[in-house]
Image 1 (cartoon, rainbow, N blue to C red):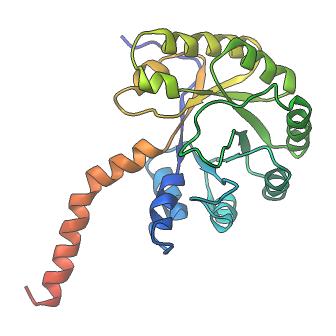
Image 2 (image 1 turned 90 degrees about the vertical axis):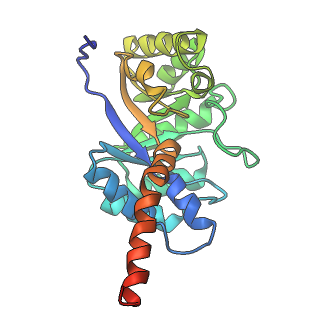
Length: 246
């Protein structure tokens, strides 16, 4: 029988790659704000969106609308910059997840370097906490990163599951996640996880009892295209045939 966990496991859906598809044409569709509503209707516990400094997918207007319209919980992913902190303080999302950014990367490639500018991180975390915003740090599943997150005053950590996603199943990557989750929870941190999770590899991560929240996006958008494209083609065929009286 599956293990019984005291803490329910939440699913936050990242809608960034709905915006990625829209930005390929710089048009109006698909709309990540509408996608957020569909995800909530389908049972998502929260919505995640990452406003990158280069605005490669989500735009400021998207974030403004999500902050107003998300009915569950809005989790704003952002870099630790003065611009982004000011935006968060103005919009007051339920949660901010501070993530690393490199302009040349295709996607987030690892956790925050918590030792590079601890004073700057502590200052931002203090401002966000002072505004009543829950703060999570996106980190590698390493003991030093967990300890540093606690020392910096974060409410939560999000464990980077990218290495596990490349090497799923039992092994060092999964064990590192288990160990970090246990350490984080023992220190009083809420434990989240995400990056590269799919329906095929999510099980062992979801089974970690200390994990409270999973952030999943790209795979869900991919699955939506795979499962919904045939229906979209049939819908277009019917519209075309109706125009010809067929």
